[in-house]
Length: 139
Figure (cartoon, rainbow, N blue to C red):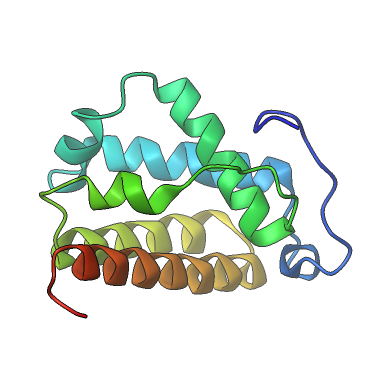
């Protein structure tokens, strides 16, 4: 199955109870990354690397579908991609999380926003720790 093919949510996916569906995921990803592209801190990092935004957004929608709906659509490996970005700092993670929270709190029902924020924090923490470990900051 490709990242673009829709898979049904897992019956026990946390997003179901929170009212999240593929349309909400698409809306969140599109609106959030539109803001990221314009952000003074995050925009330069993303815009210098993403050559095809449509393709990237499709991957991100598959990623979030896998995270909150447990569809298994995303087959990528985000850690090596993020480790390779030398300029990522804790400030980038903090801004990414703040902008993401602003987006979902503004555009989603409270239960959905809460789940998105919880998962975004877990993802950021995992990526941040992986980057620190790869840089020898933690061991």
